[in-house]
Image (cartoon, rainbow over all chains, first blue to last red; front, side, top):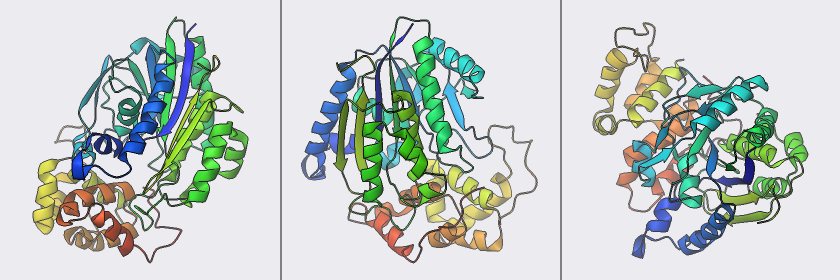
Amino acid sequence: MATVAAVIASTHHPFYYKASTSAGSDRPPFADEWVAKIAAFRETLTAARPDVLVMVGSDHFHQLWLDNMPQFLIGKAPFYDGNWYNEEREFGLPRMFLRGDEDLSAYLLRQGMDAGFDLAFSNELRIDHSITCPLITLRPEADLPIVPVYTNIFAPPLPQPSRFAELGRTIRRLVESWPSDKRVAIIGTGHLSLELGGPRQFGPHGPDPEFDRKAVSWIASGDLESALAEVSLDSLWLPGNATHGFMDFLLMMGVAGDGAKADYTDSLDLFHTMEAYFTWYPEGTQ
Amino acid sequence: MSKYLVDKFLFTIDRDPELVERYRADPSGTIAWWEAEQAGLILNCHGQERSTWHAFTDTERAALASHDYVTLFELGAHNFLLLTLFIALFERDYAEPLAFQREFAARLGHWSLPYPDIAT
C-alpha cells in the first residue's frame, strides 16, 4: 500500500513569487525573511522524498463557474496546465505544466464515492494559484505528478466545515489503502483571516489577528474538535469575508488526523494576511 | 435583482484582456454590447443555445456603466470578482503599490457586518 510521506498545510499567498524574484527597489523589505521561511518549509517536503503530490486547493472562478459549480472535485488527467491570464496580470505568476497521476485520481474518485462523497471530476483542468503557489513554494521544480482536489470555499451555498474535515480524513484513509508502493505527500492550502473586496482588505495585518492566533493553535495542535466547535459557515464571515478558505485547513487537519500535532509550524505576519506553514510526518519525524 | 448576471459580467470581462481594456475605456458601450449579445451565452455551449431571460436592472446597469464598485458591493456582487476586475481596471492609475486596493477599502469603510449577501 502507498505511504503518506507528509501532510502539509499552508496559506497560498499569490504575491510570494513576485516578492521572492524581485530585486533592487522593487524588492519588498520583508522578502528576505519570507524567502528564508519558505526555504525551511520547502525542506520539510524534500525530506519526505515524495513520489506523488495530492494538491488540495480551490478554484478562484477560473474554470469553475456559477452555472455548474461542484462542491468537491478531483482532477483526473494526464497533464495539467497551470495559472491564468488574470493571475499573470495581477500576481506575475508564470505559466506552469504538471503531470498527473491518473491511477491515484481514479482510485480516489471511485473509493471516495463509495465512502460517501459524491465527487465531481474533471478530465481537463487548468489549475490556479491555490495549487500552483504551494508548488512554487514547496516544489518549484514542478517535477512530480499531481492529483488536484478542488473545494468550494467561494460560492455559497458551501458545504459545512465538518464535511471538509471528513473529506480530509477520507482522503488520508484512501491514500493509505491505494495499492501502490509510492510515497504520497498530501498538500493543501487555505486562508487564515482574509478580506477580499471589502472594507477590511489590505490592512497592515490580517483582518482578525485574534482569529489567526487561535487558528494557528488549532492547526498546530491538531485540535479539530475545538476548531469545529467554534467555526460555522456563519461565523467565518466575522474574521474576514474570504475566511471560508479556512475550511481547507480543516480538511488538512482531517488528513493529518484528529489530535495530530504538527511536526513543523511556522508563520509570518504580513500585510493583508498572515502566512502559516505546517507539516506532519505520519511515519515519524524525518 | 440579477446578481448572477452582474457576476457573470464581471467574470467574463475579467478573464479576457481585450474586454478589460474595452470596459475601462468605454464602460457604457461595453455594458450595452454585452447585455445585448453576450449575457445569454451559456458558457461552454454553442452560441445558438442561449438563455433567453437575462437582463440587468436599471440600478445594476447604471452601476456597471459608471464603474461604481461601491454600489456593486452593496448589490451583492461577488467580492472576489469585484476586487480582481477593478484592480485590473484602475491599479495602474495609482503611483503607490496597493494604493487603489486601500482606497477601495476606504470607500467601503461605512460598512460593517453583515455585508450584503453574495449568494446567487
